[in-house]
Length: 119
Image (cartoon, rainbow, N blue to C red):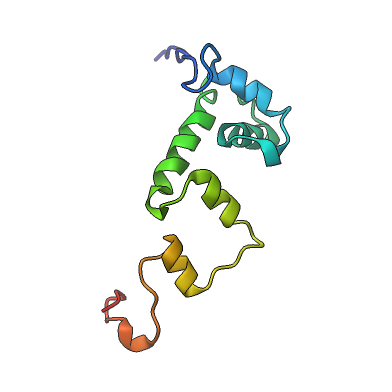
């Protein structure tokens, strides 16, 4: 079985630039100033992968879309969630609920039913 290499298309936010060009650039960016795509490209690089090779070139873009999808219910931007979830940032239960990390705060065991769902 043979497979065709993926056709690279320019990224939506940087016209004319392919995913492999963005991935190659990622290794030259300070992570504190990097976009999500650049961070994922750097992660690939750090585990010994070539982020611009066929099969990986679009991975940073796909990961950015996945993180955006997964954090959509928080009511915050991806950048805000990333900033606020820093290890030095702690939330009380009520703050976590207000932020959108959780749906319910269990105050005592009586609030949890036999199947583990709050009553």
